[in-house]
Image (cartoon, rainbow, N blue to C red):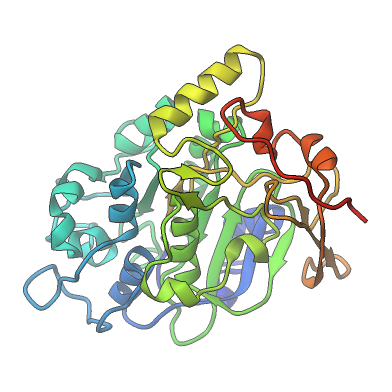
Length: 372
């Protein structure tokens, strides 16, 4: 999560490294904050609401909020959740000190989740050592989570050049881990607020995503909705009315859940998914329970993309019933329009990276119409 700069200040010259990532993968050109100052935006992303749009205050009577958070939703479903806070002195620290600002650590504001916060809200460490790099290298990143740079590295007190350098140091580390190398990692960089009401940068890095620009109005609640989609939870509070990022970026539609399992048949628990994936790797097959990661918001599902159809075109998982294709205008990458087409079982089964039936535990998909 970066701080306090609008998109027109950041792109293209303010943070050239981030701009290079935005052009290579994808970004939104009309992403807006929820309000001012910082705290309401962090609460909105994690809690699905800005609540009473508080001033920046430390967690205390009158400045705490009811759960659940997205992290709490994940934990209640047997998934892992962590937050990595740079320069924080101790887990779930409710007091700002030095380069750490508790206003940028929203989990600390939900007293109903204090126990979970104290075990999962951790000092981030550095690219050389600490909780984050250990989890990246070990392939033990949680299901959902957040990274917050310190005040010098998030653009709040430091310069945009410092924020860009921080990303230049961390992004290659994240991409060197097993999640990214296996095509299971996705990364979001988003700013909490601009100077006024202007759009802020939102950049999405994901396998198969190339040169996408989303120009429709979107705000932070769409990120809350995306998290809930990934953990199979109902959209939290204001996220119910938020835009669907997966559709806007042409990413595969995400499976929902029925009871304790996904409708596509994926095991719901992390251990069950790992066991299923290990069995498939032993048989020489690709994992069917992929993972994805966002450094501001950590997610363990992948964004499968059709490898042959090119820019602006993605095939959703079988069962969503449509191939979603988007055309682009010139080299600007702006969306022109969508068309939905039925997907045949035969065609879907030819795409093992999006077909639940390729996993032994998955039920066979129903018959559908042919592609036209």
